[in-house]
Length: 341
Image (cartoon, rainbow, N blue to C red):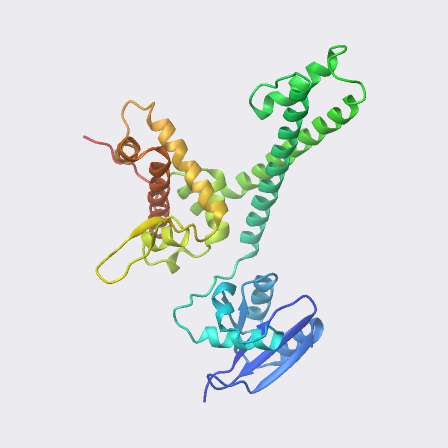
């Protein structure tokens, strides 16, 4: 007798359910509201439940796991090719069942509440940072048209604007209230950004994995917490290369027969996490140039920068930092730099 597999096409209010008791065959179909959906699984015998890793999937996965079911999340881009003909809720549920039978499709790990909190703090911080940058760029453009150049650096902007407003006949009076309001917005955004960083710092103070990751050069508070929030279980990656490939830091391959071609990095995975790793690698390169006795990692990075250029060296170093992070995380040890003798 086969174990029951249930595929669910999630939505806000209406949920399409396909029950399969034999592989490749759908024995039951249901269409439930939100309340009936939860009652159905509370009364059902333990089964394998399949979701696409979309909005609210992690919440329902945690809820159904507590009910005794085995919930598996599948990546949506891997399920989409199994949708035949028209896209409907019924065809989506059937596609989830068919994709589950493909052993090459790896499930998405279910996020914990702590991971969701960290990820939310990062997303809010990034949104506030982008909004602050937009405000600053608008400020500079407006004042430049009035003949005033603001010094480089976000921290110098608000004091410079207040100094201009304090001078008579420098800024048109009709524009002054709008500039003051914009200064207050930038100050409020910076306060929110600092607050989110404070919450992230308080999380890392009692999280051993984050503390170990922060011993790696180029990985600080933001990168360490992002790794924990978006990666989850590091043991699902058999090697550091698999982890770097998951982050999109390995070359894209286009090979046929005896001809093998490795091109640019694939840029798969989370772009925010990859950006933090590349920026961390740039900071390592910058500091290494002013270090009298660099370790082997920095010597390798500087030599690569000399032969291949700064940008390629930064990406290559980000790849290596990802592999080091995998080793530090999986082996539960801190990073120990090796210096040339």
